Image (cartoon, rainbow, N blue to C red):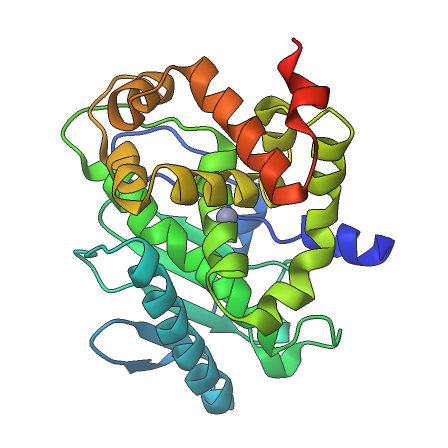
Length: 279
Ligand SMILES: [Zn+2]
């Protein structure tokens, strides 16, 4: 179990802001891009995606294209959106891949988006199976409409907590996809359950784990406030994320956090009155 927990840490997602904002730029990613095989890319393209791949990796490209459609459908059902560009998905062979094999990465802004993936047939660790690809492509895909909506709005906040951006991506990937995916990734979620049951389930603590904690916070937001309000929160013209919570969800930050505790206690069968109500 421990090794699996470590592996999950390698699923990193770096967002490069292309227009108007400062963002995180990873030297690894730049290096990776420089040594890519642009001149040798083959590609397959349809209405929604461009898949680029190396010679000999056509089967991988087709597989990834299928996962991309599954990802798009999954995200579309919870967060309807329209991208003004066609995302490119680059399927690297092992030779040109400089990151860990458990890494998948997205670079996106308001005018373009690319996802970098190691070809499934070049994976040597069986943990990175079909379910892993399906779930993580949903995760990466979520960043595309999310950051498009966040960065293309005429005004409003652009910095948001990691538990919101990563949490939404994990929520769609784990909870809104298939029962087999949920089963594979459920182990990482028990930590959150323990926090809530031990009286440490405050949003700030849970949200520190932007992936697993964030996934549950996103689940709470969808179940308590609904998908339209979550979309409004992303697109909000309020000047900060907490002001957007007030404006779009109609609650104060304190109420938002308290509602989280009540929801989490119900979700994990913990005693809210005993654990949190007296404070
Ligand atoms: Zn991510």
